[in-house]
Each structure stands twice: as structure tokens, then as C-alpha cells.
Length: 392
Ligand code: TRP
Image (cartoon, rainbow, N blue to C red; front, side, top):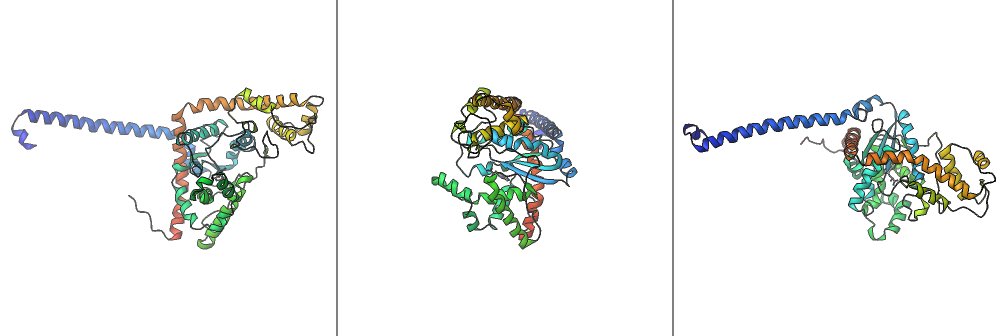
């Protein structure tokens, strides 16, 4: 380069110009980076409570952990039976809501659908009243500690235990062509989810009770070897009694988001006319009285739904529909349901269009969750004899 200083050549001029461009580029990229950092800080400023301050402030609260798979569209069973009560929990508990995409891939997923449903589940949770500033809401695969602890726990979970899981047996029958190892070890991943956050309480439906039991067994076994590493979780029984909603097509079975019969489930995002039509078609009995009684499971289910929606007691409902037929009653339940879901649907429509906001929530949630998960994972690593992870 010095050579060019002695000879005022074209090459030198060119070089000078290049140097200037280069310096300009550095300044520009630094400013850009600073600007980006500023934007990043701003992102978190929107959700300060999801970060460390919130967690530290509420350190003494009991931990509640709940997971939902981003597959299938949530039903009014999920809403009335669980999600509707979630916002209240954050006053008393420190709550984690995990969108379990890693669990979802134990059965084959269409990638585009999985991605879309992950956003949709998040938007729906927020639309149902879950405040991302007061709860840690995040996507499972954004926090690698889940998969890491799951592997470790796999080594403390017995083949025999896993073989006894009824969900594994059911799902392997349903997906006979894809009985993969993940489907088998699903419970250790779920145990990792729960145990990473030193969870005390897990709200679970009947179908997940066995998984909570095995989580407790794994925790007790691990603690037995290494001392008290994990809190042993309990099932969460809400003080507010939550409705148990049955299928509209078969009122002896629980309403399930994966039911193939469209008329069996009312989904939170079903349009008003669809909701009313599904209630009109609900299976009842050959009697005509709106009354809770033997063999009237269909009517009892509709009464539970109506009661959950309107806060009316069974005797009040019986009085209200005294002398009226099933048609009137079904229409009233359908309308009450559509009315109750309208504000949720409106908020959902607004949120799902705002991808940037949803991604900000994901980022803040993952940061908060990862920070807590790391504490447990480091302790586990130390206890089992892994060497300290070098910084790289
Ligand atoms: N397995 C649960 C389901 O399918 C979802 C889930 C994943 C979960 N991790 C969890 C539920 C932890 C409770 C706790 O419904």
C-alpha cells in the first residue's frame, strides 16, 4: 500500500476512495447495530414483567406449569374447562404456558401446518385473556433445555414404565406405521418440561394424569440418587370448579380437539352460525324435559355448558326452560356460546394479523423460560457428573 503513497497513481486514488468507503461502512454498520440493539431493548421494554424482574418479584409464588400441543384447534371444552381460568391464576401463582411443538412431532406433522398452528395457539391463548406480561408464555423448541433434560431423564426412566403408558398404547395402535422412539419416550420429555421449572402444580385432564404420575416417579427416583434436585409436582385442582365438557355427538365421551366428527366439537374459532348449528344437532334423548336425570347425558352436558357460560345453576336452568322444548334450549345454549366467544374471536383476529407482536412475545417468553430452565439444568448436570460446560 505504501508504494501508492509515493506514486500518485490512479491506483492510489482508487485505494483512497475504497478506504473511505470502508470507513463509511464501518460507521454505518456500527450505527445500524446500535440502532438494532436499541430496537431490541425496546422489544423487551414492552414485556418487562416476562423478564427477570417479574420472576424475581414473584419468587415466592408457587409454580404452575401447563403445556398444550399446537395441533388441532382448541374447543370450548378446553376453553370452559381450563383456559378461561388461566388468567386468574397469575395473581396467585407463577405460571408457565408451554406450546409443546416438540411433543407434536411424535406423530407426523405437515411442517407448514405445525408452524401456523404454533402462532395460532399463541394468539388464541392471549385472546383468551392470558397476559404475556404476567405469565411466561413460550414455545418449547425455543428453549433447548427441554430436549437436553429429556435425554438425561430418559436414562432415569424405565422401559417397563414407558410400555405401560396407555397413551403410548393407544397412539401406537392409531399410528401403526409410525411407532417411533419419540412416541415411546414422550413422558420423559413431559417430565422434563415440568421438572425444569421446579413446578409444584400441573393442571391436567384425565388423559394426562398417568404422565404426571410417571413425572413424579422420575423426580422421586432422581432425588433418591442425588438429593433434592426436583420439586415433586402435584396435580392442580382449581378452586374454581371447571366444567367438564363432553362431546356433542357422544355425551359419554370427553370433547376432544382431535375428534374426527366435526359435529362432536365446538371450536373456539367456529363462526356464530356454525356454533348454533352444531348445538342444534347435539345428541340428546327421546324425552322432552330440560332436566338433569338418569340417561340424559346429552341434556346434562348442554346444561353444564349453559351453566358455565351464564353462571346459572341447574335448578335455575330447569326453571328457565320449564314448558319449553329442546329446540329452544339448544338455541339458547348456542347463542350464549357464540356471544361468549365473540370477544375472544375478535381479539384473535387482531392478534393473528400481528406477526411481529407474536414474535416479540415468543422472544420475551423464551428468554424468561430459558433463564429459569438453565438453573435446574446446570444443577442436574453437576449432580450427574457432567463437566462444566465451557464457554464458546
Ligand atoms: N402432553 C400434553 C398434551 O398432549 C401437553 C403437554 C406437554 C403438557 N408438556 C406438558 C401438559 C407439561 C402438562 C405439563 O395435552
